[in-house]
Length: 211
Image (cartoon, rainbow, N blue to C red; front, side, top):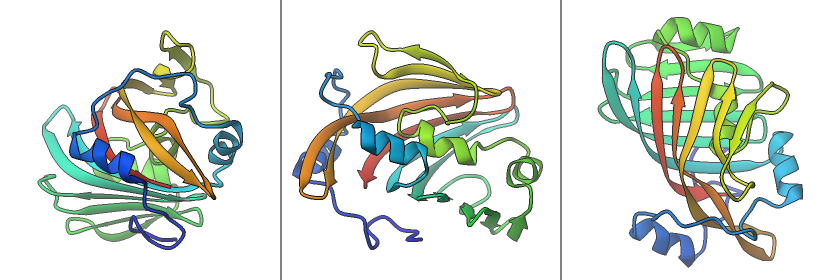
């Protein structure tokens, strides 16, 4: 898979998003026509879509709060989450490629995981919802698992979501321009999302998208 935004198969978004990025992507009120269309949504839920996003996050445990820049690359079923900056442990790369989990960091070295979620939690000391985050980042519930949804007033976008041991709060949305073949249209994607479990709270601010 292409591990970096802008790799093969990923088109740069149009000038509307660039303007949004330069103006710090101010939150806009959702409108009925700004939504993932049905075909694209189904491809996402089937893990048949590639996208990349980046931004900033803060991670709070019982012991400390750390901040980092992140890049999330999703290529169909594969996923890479790269963390860098003052994160307490330096740069960290978390990935699931062909079903194989892996952690690469200065502290832990290069570790392959057999049971990705359980081993990752034991290694870091707190859970990171690697598989679910690919859907939550797009304002969708993880498919195939029970979910309690709270919708925004328009009845279309998620305001909050509870899945498993996680509560996900979609605090802000932003308008993003998507290119699909010859078509271009606007969708509302999350800008600020908070993921909370008993062990950890993760606040993610998404500032750039590429499909």
